[in-house]
Length: 265
Image (cartoon, rainbow, N blue to C red; front, side, top):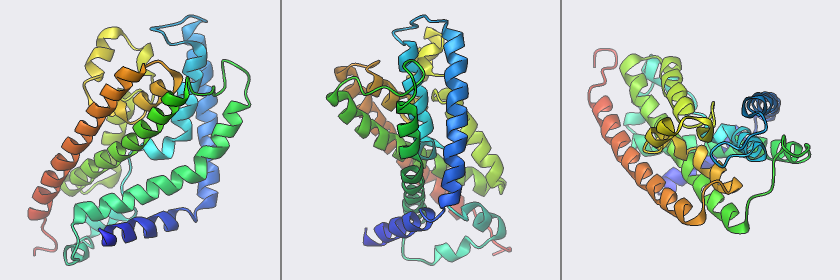
């Protein structure tokens, strides 16, 4: 466990040095935040849809942008290149589980990138006028449950990134793997279109999938769109999905490593 914490800390410290990259990310998320808010404000036309008001929609969007680095599916640093050029073989001789190693490193990267970006976006969005800015949480209980759901969502995003690594082993294309998994996650998880704005039938289907727990659930708990009891149930389901995806990821990773051939070896 100490080895994995060391990998996490090293990755965390390495990523947090990229302040220029963080500034670029902040500007990008502010741009997309304003675009999405005005787009869905026009779409809703001042109406409340499925208990989802314009003010709640704006908060939903800004939370997604503030924690974008946490929910974005990517690969651990240099992971894709190592798989493509064969340098991943050096990881095989280390006395640590390769899945856990990449998991710890990627978690450190996500948390450090989020810490550098979220505060300015939260501050700026809270200073905006009503109905286009970030509102306060529905209640103190909602805020606490939001933090729990947010952390589980971050872990969920890391597990999906591990699945993207498995696809990279099969295709040797890190960019393609990330694009596939990230597109599916964003479309089905409410990151492009808020789930409350989708047809009820579509919502019912997507509510059974793990993707909504990355961003949709934390945001809806924060704005009070989901009650306390239902939030606790959904957090429990999120944890169950997390465990299931970790087990699946370990099985697939073991299979990928077993069938890996490096320079004919």
